Image (cartoon, rainbow, N blue to C red):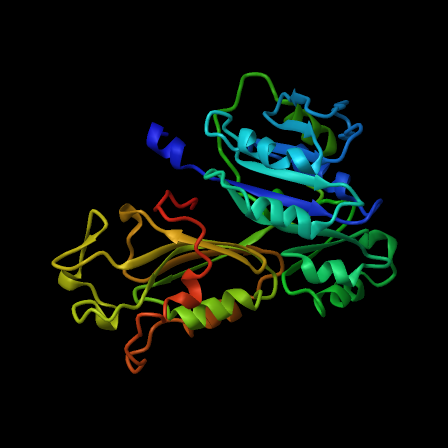
Length: 359
């Protein structure tokens, strides 16, 4: 990775909230035990000891403990959260994901506000994950979640009914788990790194545990050679498609330029991210967690004639998702877009400079 790429690199920060005893720590422990090379930073948002199952790690305020698998575990209070996140997401640290485990007494809205107010160019909002008790889910908290995790399905007689109850009110994605076993791929892309000669701690624990004890994430890929209508595409993302936890990709929006109308490129080719004989298209890097959407201008090298998207989740209906995205493609009889049409999507812009997409 070049120095420029390191400086442009962003790290998703995922907030994990929920009442005491619902399984937040179990979920975080599971992520660490199944990191598969992904470097994870964990912040506990209250004072006291941090118990990570089988790792024997304890943290005090302002302390940092380095784990064998590259995870960092810290303990802080809300006042120090912004500064700590800036330290953890610095390119030199090399983390791929930061998880903030909130106290059971913490206010999720306040944590989201702190993160969204951060001026750190390397930290991006990765979504609010609310862990709920399957036996008695807090539906008010479910309404706040970008991803609602209905935990403890092994303790209820009707697991499907428990998930359906939450899905009926949640705006974001909903996933059911047992013992906090959430597939890490639902929160961050797996990172393939050279394996050391000696097994890391997370690899040893996986050998002891056996197969992954979670429902595997699935993905659906969508490509288009024509731009996507920003209004229809934004509505698709905002609706929280069933089963989709994350979406990522690059999308070109329609332009009123005569040479580019109808979704065709002048000259029919892309050259170094530029249009032959024309201007750069309106290409955007799109990342979502549940209904939390963030977009930013894509770099020239990611220029596309239409769209390249990957949807990640569980229990995905591939045919329905592809059909829904197909309906977002620009039609020949669509009206010429106004100068404000793109705002349906670009209002979710998170920066003012193009940076590397995380695909």
